[in-house]
Image (tube, rainbow, N blue to C red; front, side, top):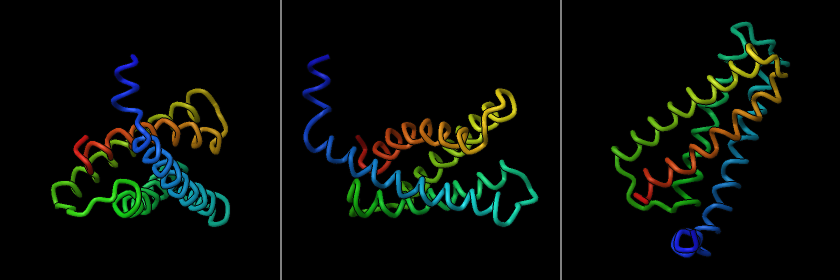
Amino acid sequence: MMKFVRNYLTRETLLELFRFFIAGMSGLIVQFALYALLMRVLTFQSGYLVASAIAFVVSVTVNYIICVKWVFTVKNQTGAKMALFALTSVIGLAINTGVLYLLVDKLSLHKMLAQAVAAGVVMFWNYVTKRLVLRGQ
């Protein structure tokens, strides 16, 4: 355990985690704002899952830009890396939708609270996969 801490929880990694948290919170704010706008203001007729998917895609775009420019500071972004980032985001969308469906339809949790839980699960998935995709580590 101590070897893990020494090798992986360096000052640089902790700073990167902090930046990723800020990037994630920025994406989360975009996601929640758009989700609330679609659900409450526009009374989105296609349902909460479609509204969530739209909000998720927009937030992933914001997150991608921040991750490449600030969190992982990727200089040589290849088409393959962009495709992998998109693929991991689609998997994240599936995770988000599945958790949201389970919590709302099966456990009767409030939609906004369920979205918060789903976002937390997806944030963990995103950090691990985005780091691997963008930095290869």
